[in-house]
Image (tube, rainbow, N blue to C red; front, side, top):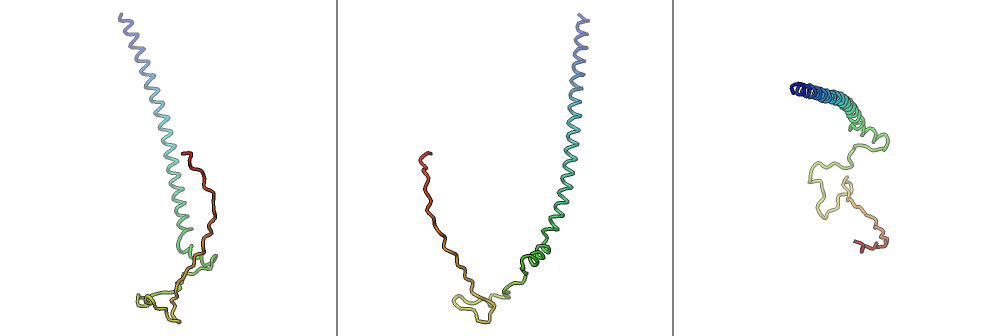
Length: 124
């Protein structure tokens, strides 16, 4: 009876060693994958830093203004500058002829309405 008990204990110890080895191997593989992902994250953060610096250079206000002046012929000069509310015309007054103020009128073109067939919605 003692020999059978000893044999079962040795077999149980062998199985537990195999189980611990299996867990250890899975842990080693997970650790390698974690290191790889951490390297990728640090590489991506470095790339993001480079892209942010490039974006700040490309989309900077000075560069946008320079391109607007060079390519589109736009300038940053205001068409009319007001220093106080006293310069604004009263409600029903027209501005003086020499004044840089003008009435702003906008006309919206009439939208053309086209008839479109109505779909059958009885299939609900």
